[in-house]
Length: 306
Image 1 (tube, one colour):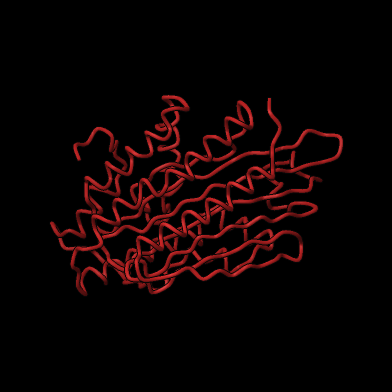
Image 2 (cartoon, helix red, strand yellow; image 1 turned 30 degrees about the vertical axis):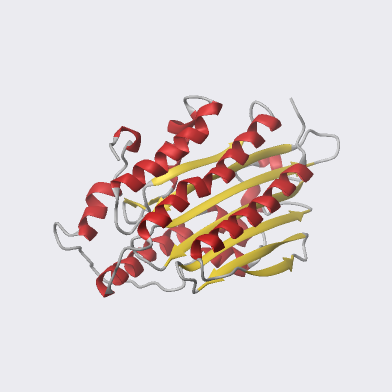
């Protein structure tokens, strides 16, 4: 079994952040990313990059972080007792894109690596990550493209990989207090440490590199559609679901806050504008209602005709 190469993982993540920012800025055509480098007193740091008020993206954040510490908080070791008394490093690239046009979906992706070490003992490590799509208005061809791209990048790693990680994504990005999905899913994996480091790292690279192949064609197809106040109001309402999930259920957000992470970077996933409306119900048969009926319930999109 190959040993973890921390430097190699970090090099990949930094290059991935560069590449994603470059291609998102190109797709936007009007905005530029502003970088905010930071350090963490307890150990480590990162660089947060945010594009705001672009021609296509109202806000896009692409964050790299590499944090470390002498020990994990009790909240983190309660469910993983084997991590107690170990120093740790956690690094990753995480991004959230909130487009201006309501017909372009919001999207999230991340790839991350965690390692905990103790003298005289083997390290405990794993990879995690994935990507998911949160449309405001559903297009079947977009959903099919998104999931086909996910399936194709998983295929070299085994036939069971895509269905396993699709289901994990459907289960994870579920807003329990609303009893509804956040979006149409994608891939989600965690605790990946078998059969060996090289295999796990290769899959993580495939996910990170595959995100733009899944997302940018959808952006290109939908960015010219015209929209008005009704569509914008619905987009802002549905963004409220995004906020609720991230603050109540998302493990990455909670881990970052509990370990003394940089709050500004952790919360860069929040949309710049959002609204809530008491007792909202979409008009029956409307495009807004079709999102709830045809897209948010779990589906096998590979069986659909684009």
